[in-house]
Amino acid sequence: MYFDFYNGGAEDQYTLKENVEAFHRITFRPRILVDVSRISMSTTILGHRISAPIMIAPTSFHKLAHPEGEIATARAAASCNTIMALSFSSTCTVEEVASSCNAVRFFQIYVYKRRDVTSMLVQRAERNGFKAMILTVDTPRIGRREADIKNRMISPHLKNFEGLLSTEVASDKGSNLEAFAAEVLDRSICWKDIEWLRSITSLPILIKGVLTHEDAIKAMEVGVAGIVVSNHGARQLDYSPATITVLEEVVHAVGGKIPVLIDGGVRRGTDIFKALALGAQAVMIGRPILYGLAAKGECGVRRVIEMLKDELELTMALSGCPTLKDITRSHVRTDQDRFNC
Ligand code: FNR
Image (cartoon, rainbow, N blue to C red; front, side, top):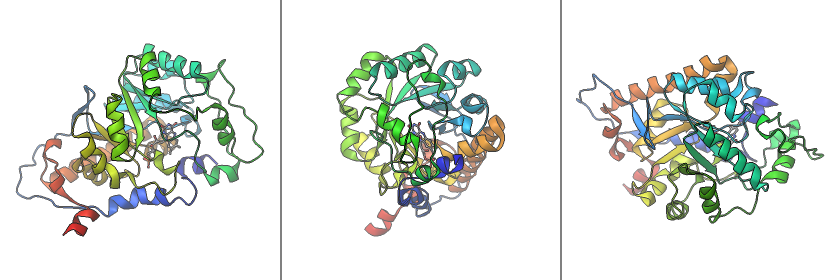
């Protein structure tokens, strides 16, 4: 049941497959005879230096993968010198994660009908040294994940909400996640609520779930500090485009004014290189982190990040790009390029 929850996507899982396959359709235009005796992958995200453009995406319920839950993931992020985004639906509290390591941490937010619950958690995260807020905007309702419905998936205990609300919502239709989401998520949130969010935190706000240039422009108009091109790992609206296919559209709209991150289907260093070539400042990794966590806790997560870093380094060397700045649009060929030829 837990594997299905981690692995699955919405409905036909078209987007789930596409997120990965769209990367496969992009090929390289490697350059030769460049000195690649030294490769540097280090970059900064909102002023925080990290060892490589690889961050940990916010994913819920880490204790379903490993008893140490988000604490193990955060420790791995710290030892790899990268940023972890902690999910609003974490199984360890913000305080436990904050006191377990010194990783740079961002906090992902859902807006609940009980605004006081969202605002209390935002303030707790801010007090505990989280450095940015990531507002996930693709989830006014939970996507139809049929494996979870069939398995009658239930939410684990969410310690962050102790004394605030109960996660034990009964459902006679299958997954209790759906019933819980229906009860708590504020379906009415819209652009003006960014202003509300800004009134309860002084931290930079990133918006996660942008897939069009229209929304990228709106996000900039309301003053967000960054954008995450994401379709929630294909768990929300099936037949959303693969994220890598819309990255460039968003990057062009943003015009370098704020950082653009991407997640969805990133499984190899070559995928990371492709995302950077199309204008992302970094990628976020979802499921592979959960699988590393399930396999070997903190060590497993570290190993996943190290594998991705090793692969990115090799890809940079073989493409003639000793630094991230050397990776340009001309290093890749997309479906669109072939069509235009
Ligand atoms: C997610 N994702 C997610 N996003 C978010 O903003 N808040 C959350 O609590 C969760 N929870 C969650 C659970 C699980 C099991 C998965 C797989 C994903 C989405 C996540 O942040 C990210 O967008 C995707 O996981 C990226 O796609 P890949 O790397 O899993 O293909």
